[in-house]
Image 1 (tube, one colour):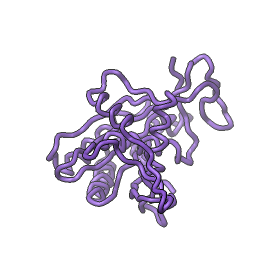
Image 2 (tube, helix red, strand yellow; image 1 turned 45 degrees about the horizontal axis):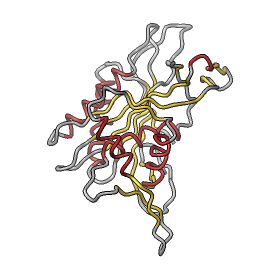
Image 3 (cartoon, one colour; image 1 turned 60 degrees about the vertical axis):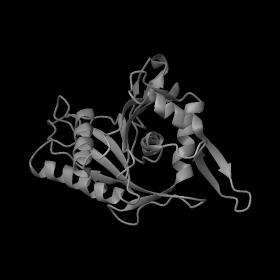
Length: 252
């Protein structure tokens, strides 16, 4: 189930109503003394010469599909939650502006609503809704609020519109770590926190509790932060769990 929030743009007659989806945004929300992280992934086919468009599926196919991390930020500690919500809303609009023919952009936003995150989830929903009411442009948004669970629990979709996905930590972390190890995840050199994210990726290990049989993911060292990795993992999960036809661009 995907919560869809439509923008206010009106498409020109004969033009597409929406543009292809290119990005997913992941937001890991920190508490008072923990950092918040925002990550943006763009999906691509490489090399570009192998890309072929499938009209039936509405997406580029063939070649190797990779994920480019094109944005990674940690708002300053102590930043008010409403300011974080507005920053994320501004980012979403910048990533998917209205097209030349009035078509709306399409984008997926995955946000950690565990604990204190629920308050910011509500602030974000309000930020997009209020912009629409004021007649401001808002892209078509697949909004996914996530509650992170532990152990061997199962991923569960929300029981109603606007509810929360229940997603085990392992189902978020493992695909991101695997994509990094398999070189399907590319991290832009110019990102300020690139080094910290690479360390988080390298420091994670899979731990099996022999007594319970549960799999968990933990940093190698006690006290390591994992906010950047969680934001990245949420963005990647948004691609993998998207039931809407995926449209991606080719990149060399």
